[in-house]
View 1: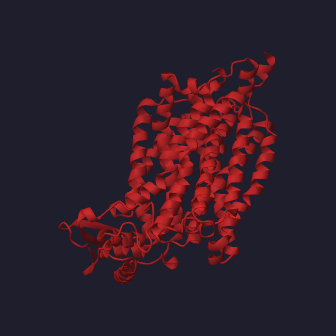
View 2: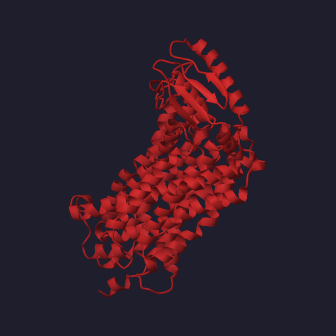
View 3: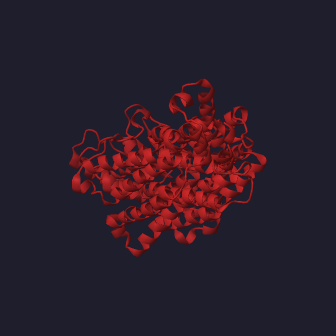
Length: 558
């Protein structure tokens, strides 16, 4: 009995062992997030390397979908590794996850592209993304549970908030490595093969992470359960086969992690995509801006985690969702104003409309590219694809059935054409002429091909992006402690991992392609924001009404 009592953390100043636990868990998780974020930051280049059989728009879309494939399988990783963690222990489970993650990332760095091995390249790439997703599905639950079970009562928010910084620090580290590599190499060299360097050097990070994690001991709560013979023999059945626990899992998903996920991915991922893909900000400049915002915002993870030990986890998370829902549209509008004022001015002075038969305007998603011309070659699709690539917002005005689409830019009208009946060579010629005419008028109307660095207000952009990151820290800083406290020790790893990874893997991970599709479908560069706003509001309502506060729960007695 005395040995068991001694295993419990007590409310006292942080011990050396506790610092080691936090540092080792956090550092290993930083490296895992570094691996995972590299792909998202280099999605455009990876699209050209591994999906070059598709047109330019589809390359980027498929690269985003391959990125999201890793998120899609995260809940399955949560089930597999969560069960393992509740059966054999927290320590050994997240040793396995980091090995899987690290080797998959390293292989991406040496994997030949589409031009070398054809269709095998994207197939292998997606397989590696799936392995990464499975591994990450088991990583977070293990690290959060491990740290929380070492933390004393009343300090779990503060202790686990260090784990929450790892996602941002991992992204920050990946951006640093990318920027340094880009600056050392020329941009053409980086796009050709230099992009592989950040992936390849991850093998060094993997070795350090494994070495650190091997030095850890199992958590006190798990050791106590094991010594008393109280380990769960069927964690999945206990976690999801009884309504009492399943109800809490569902509430944790809809009332906590779904909203947390979309706020997180909007602040750290979609903001980067918006700068580079929509506002045409130079990649290096955009990465510097995001990195500066992350550096500013990261301490707030610990601030809000510590604050949650005093006032509760739930009020801080709900406030973050509310602020995001209320301010995303004006914040992103201001980002456009300060990043690309010429684009904002052109949208106001020269609005664009596409007059077309609604039946000829499709949700453009090309599974296979046709030789010589795109799958969607109706007159409306040809016009809107050019406008979307140029980041030109537009409205669609219905025209008579069967009519050829027209594009009105200011006081100019440009006729599109029907590409379906044309042979490949004829289509290519006519598409080139149409594209040239569109580009000329878009430029004449003041729509810039890229953002003017001299016209940017980088200080204001840094402040705006920092606000987005602070929203992230509000919803993410207290979440680990709250999820740990919602579930009993014997099935904690399994129970908390699933809602976390469904929320972050599905609701959050699919944000970039969903937002991208909404923008293309609606013709407005801000339409993608509706997705995170709606999800954040759903979480705000469900979380406020049905999720209980947990800060005073004693996790060592269950």
